[in-house]
Structures are given as structure tokens and as C-alpha cells.
Length: 223
Image (cartoon, rainbow, N blue to C red; front, side):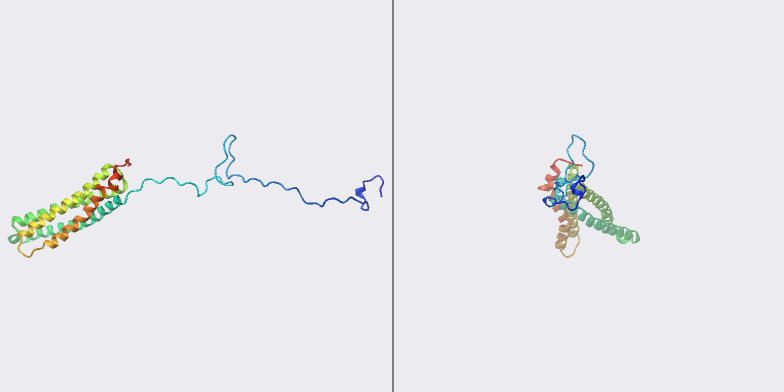
């Protein structure tokens, strides 16, 4: 043993027993850092769940705008349906008027009366008028679904009202022709045809003349 040396250097030196080694002292867990660059001095830290710089999907949703009433949508759809029906009827009317003109030119002895010529002219004019009303119906349906103005309301009301006027005109005109033509009474078939052509415009007109459909266009306007 080296008398001048440290007693810890001699393995035969007795040591005092102490507490067993328990490892390093516990430390507090580090706080999670928010995602993204650190906030400048004097500004609050980024919002969001710790560890993320953006709000989670459970955050408040933005408020929804006013929803278009079903009455307005129904009126627009009926305008499109009526446009398709009137387009087909106008093409048939123009076809029959053309047939009368061709027959009058080919056989003037039979089809040269003023009444036949008047019917052919009336059919051609009414076919053109109905085609214009088809364009009006399509424009009204589009405006009703895309705008919330008084102009859109007036266009929708006018398009359906024109169809009601046309249906009444044809009902009166066909009744007159049937009364002048000998044969069986066909008032039942005439009533069915009139109802078929006037039902959709009447419903579409009622949808925007009162209730939520009317109030939708009277609310604060947006273009």
C-alpha cells in the first residue's frame, strides 16, 4: 500500500456503504412546439392544438348563405319542362302549316279557299310566337336559379303567364273550329289537351307569386 497515495486506489481499502445508484434525476418533459416558424417577440404563439399551427377540423364552420327555396327551384324546373313541351308542339304546328301550304300550291282547286290560307298563316305565326316563348321560358328558368333580383322574378312570372295566355288562346280557338266543323263532340279531348299545356305554367306561376318563392326575390337582392 502506498502511504502517500489515495485510499481509493487500493482495492483492499474498506469503504463505507452508501445508497445504491438510482440513475440520473428525473426531468420534466419538454412542451411540444407549435408547427411553423416561431412567433415574433411580442406576438402570441400560433393558434391550434399543441404541435400544429393550423386549427383542427373540429373548428367552427363558416356560416352558410341563404338557401334558395324549393318553390323557386320547382318553378324553374317547370319552366324548362314547359319549354320542351312547347318546342315539340311548335315544331308540329309549323309542320302542319307547311303541309297545308304545299297542298294548296299542288291542288289550288281544293285548298285555295281563304279559310285554308288563313289557317296556314295562323299556324305559321303561332309557331313562331311559341318558339319565342320557349326562349323566354329557358331564360326565366336560368335567371330564377342564378339571380335574386326583381328582374329575375318578373321574367319568371312573365314567362309562365305567357304560357297561360297561349293555352287559353288555343282552347278558345279550337272550340271555335270544332263548332264550325260537323262531327262528334270532342270537348273532352280538348279539355285534356288544355289542362296538359296549362298545368305546369299555373303551378310555376303560383310558386313565385306567394309564399317563400315571392319572399326570396323580395329579400336583400344579390346579383
